[in-house]
Amino acid sequence: MGAFEIIGGKKLKGEIIPQGAKNEVLQILCAVLLTPERVEIENVPNIIDVNKLIDLLSDLGVKVEKLGDEHYAFTAENVDIEYMHSDTFKKKGSGLRGSIMIVGPLLARFGKGYIPKPGGDKIGRRRLDTHFIGFQKLGANFNYKSKENFYEVEANHLKGTYLHLDEPSVTGTANILMAASMAKGTTTLYNAACEPYIQQLCKMLNSMGAKIKGAGSNLLTIEGVDYLGGCKHRVLPDMIEIGSFIGLAAMTGSEITIKDVNYPMLGIIPDTFRRLGIKMELKGDDLYIPAQDSYEIESYIDGSIMTISDNPWPGFTPDLLSIVLVVASQAKGAVLIHQKMFESRLFFVDKLIDMGAQIILCDPHRATVIGLDHKVNLRGISMTSPDIRAGVSLLIAALSADGKSTIHNIEQIDRGYQNIDTRLQALGADIKRIS
Ligand SMILES: CC(=O)N[C@H]1[C@@H](OP(=O)(O)OP(=O)(O)OC[C@H]2O[C@@H](n3ccc(=O)[nH]c3=O)[C@H](O)[C@@H]2O)O[C@H](CO)[C@@H](O)[C@@H]1O
Ligand SMILES: C=C(OP(=O)(O)O)C(=O)O
Image (cartoon, helix red, strand yellow):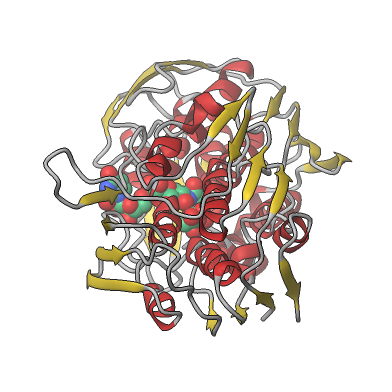
């Protein structure tokens, strides 16, 4: 297990370029399985989860060409379906959450898709029912081998239908969308997720020849086609990284410019940070965060304490709630953080409390944060990162704290943030990788 050693309290300054979006690229990479033709993808981040998925595709027989640092081409002409029965697949397939999205494309193109229970953050129950109920409604037979935790779907052909999802699952929507794009007839997908990740997938599939309408809304209409061809796709900047950098600037009182953020695709994210009192300015497509000694959390119009909660898009993404929480710990004022989706994602506040933050965990889903207004600094401690976003929140806390902190289990951070140590060093941070 690797660790970061951080000496906090330094003001950072400079420009940072966000990586390509992790959760988008995981969908896009799975979509290459839909065609025997070559698919070129730009802005692919060099992070553990992405590299694991590329490795899995390669094991499945997909030809992988690395054309540049973040530029790849994939050709899924000869896919080895039998590989899905191997022990290696069962091991590698469970290494990340995103691998679940190979099932839809494989089912659509080869009539079968298998997957072991996928990995990802341990942040509470993470069911897959939406995916498999969707495939069944499209005509697939579903089998779950509970002893092995292995999911199987098979179908001679898929048939378009009306589907009302029980929840707007992000990876569930992507999976069903990919399967339906090659089903016979029309599929209507209601209560679909509409995160920018899904909008980008729709754009990519349409450029491959799919007929999808409604991207950006919760009602998608997919007219199935017999064949999808190659395409070229560019991945958006990672909105979760952008939110993390806004939080980093505020917590450390630093002046940071986040380059080329693709502002229109950030939705409610900038305004949510503004409600914590963080100033920012859009300069062209760069987001400039000035150094601020103090930022004050807004109250509701009637003076009551504000709540920030997660919601499916266009609501506030759950993946930034841990960042909001840590930023609030040094704001002026109080806020209630309500994490509705995941029941174990707020437990990391114990570490922030050890660092001196004023937080009450009301229940697994809600935490009240009383900001210290930078009157008292957090203090450095040794801690372990429980999940990717908590990990980055602790990293931000450590960079703002007095003294030395050590963060263990940084693989959790590395799975979603590209070279975070060297990029932060370039801003002036005192951070080093110690093992
Ligand atoms: C690889 C990937 O893309 N991972 C993202 C994806 O995971 P993933 O696609 O696995 O997450 P889902 O959208 O399926 O849902 C996540 C959890 O939230 C619950 N839920 C979902 C919708 C809802 O309206 N109410 C509700 O409570 C679900 O029951 C589930 O437990 O979307 C999550 C939700 O944005 C993000 O945290 C993950 O980073
Ligand atoms: C929870 C996340 O990722 P995953 O779904 O891959 O676990 C995340 O990106 O915040």
